[in-house]
Image (tube, rainbow, N blue to C red; front, side):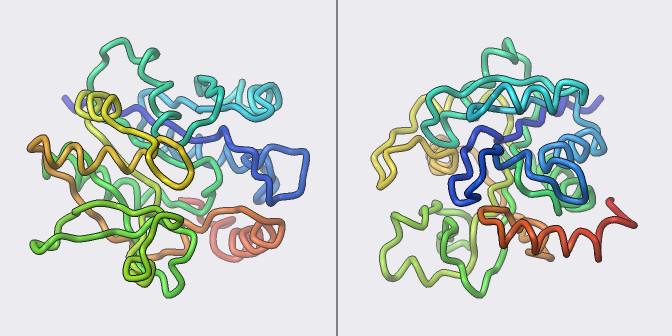
Length: 251
């Protein structure tokens, strides 16, 4: 029997650069709020539970997702991705299994990609496996630092990069799957000593490695799938891509 799969969707942000009163994850792609695409995707890959982590304008987000079958938990204040995922722990009540972390503003992600990620994670027995991608312009993304054995050493957030690190093209796609137990133990050790003063989820990875756990890296073949939405221009572009590539084949 396969371990339970819980999906946590990061959906608490303000999306300030959208210049809109609407929470970012509620902006429509293909006529439907982005977060509903991500919930549907989680269901389609067989998630046992889907939990949206909400915050900004939570009432509007709850009204949107209340008929989707997803649960929700509120992150207040919003202190980073690590802090966001910590809010899920009380809902799990020591439930074991795998926790897949997705972003609520990545509506182009495909089932195939997540199924591949889950297969690699479970076959390897890793405590965590994350998607990476090669970008010609990696600015704005966390950089993947590999060790001498080509495994993960750590991830450096864009604002914390040294000049040498900033030219690394392999980026963190922001999509992770963790074994539940090791994840929440590692989160207890994460601090906020960084440029943003936030608790970063990727900081759990070197903690896991130093604790003797393995962390896998899966390179995404089509970086377009993880294209997020931060501006009205990006939203227009995502809608254009969705129409041409996804409306007739959303899997």
